[in-house]
Amino acid sequence: MPEMRVILELGSGNDLHGGDYTKAAIRAVQDALHHSSLAFVRTLGIAKDKLIVDVTVGVQRPERVDLARVKAALPVGAVTVRAVKGGLDVPDRDANDVAVIASAAIAVRLER
Image (cartoon, rainbow, N blue to C red):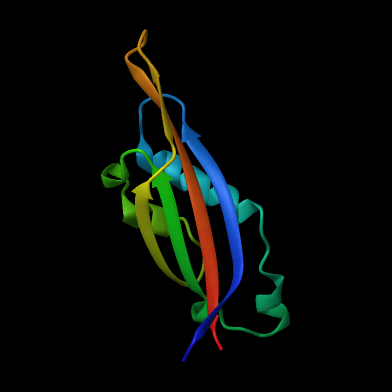
């Protein structure tokens, strides 16, 4: 059965010290979640496990994102997470550190 996207929410997050790409990705997902409310789920009586949730996080080093930990940050639905090249690294050469900035897009779909 075809699916339809019912919401797309965007967020950003960071890890200012330590270069933790997973922490920045989780914070980006949490930011996106805090911008939305899926009130229609309760109003229309839709089972939460019927939500199809696709998460894309963008960071400079996608291979360093723990996708399972990001997935665990999502409260409902059949969740898939992927990390792609994106975001921004801001080096601090004096401290030998990097600030990691991540972006997240959360798309929620339902079967028609």
